[in-house]
Image 1 (cartoon, rainbow, N blue to C red):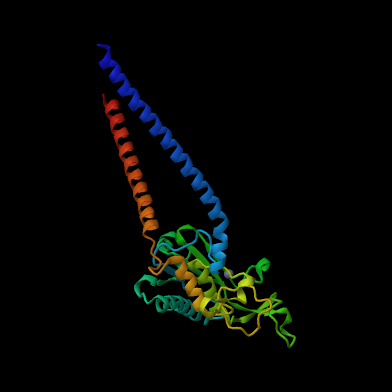
Image 2 (image 1 turned 120 degrees about the vertical axis):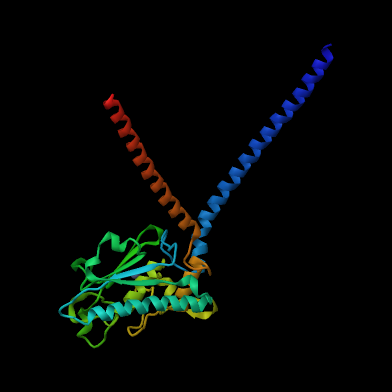
Length: 309
Ligand SMILES: [Zn+2]
């Protein structure tokens, strides 16, 4: 009589044993996997900066457009420089189409690099409802603040690819301009002329490079020629001119375009995952608001009923 029991017990023990071993094996496997992941993480942490450097492309961290951007700007008035408005709005339009055309030309992909340009009336500036749809917003100011006199423009980059560009459009007067040899080493403005900076187009293109996700090129990259011999010495993303010829014309080079294609891929600005995530946040907030409204309505109704009785 005992035997079947024993037998069953043996079978059970066998299976238990097997189960235990299986679990022990699983734990072992998981532990090993974790070890491998840990070692892999350390290796990638060491290797990634080197890999990025060997590619010689320079990006902003965590700043990337998630969709085809809407670029917004505003009409403005400058009594001393009445031509400034039309000229700067036109320059901005051209800067956008320059970046766009270079990207289309390089990838042969027409639709995925589209940027929409909107000019709002002056009074809509800093109006949330006018600007809510804008990914890149461009503002124009006459001069930089005193403490930032070297700067001819800047870009504030935010998450989800949003950014704000400010362009200072008056022509600066440099300290060493009175001497015959103009160098770009002493880039300290001592005042501003009543004229538009002839380099304002370069400034706008440079700030757009930031808005699209590009960082400055470090000095050691400037003398470097990219694979296939593409020079990056005149890249619009250079901000340190020391040692460069003073008459150099900075432009959107094929190198800058390659950097963007490297950042976004051939498929362009649209990042479906970020868009989905943003949509989800939108839905969660919407559902949350509806639930709150329903909750308060029900509570009020209940209270009323109670008071009525
Ligand atoms: Zn810059």
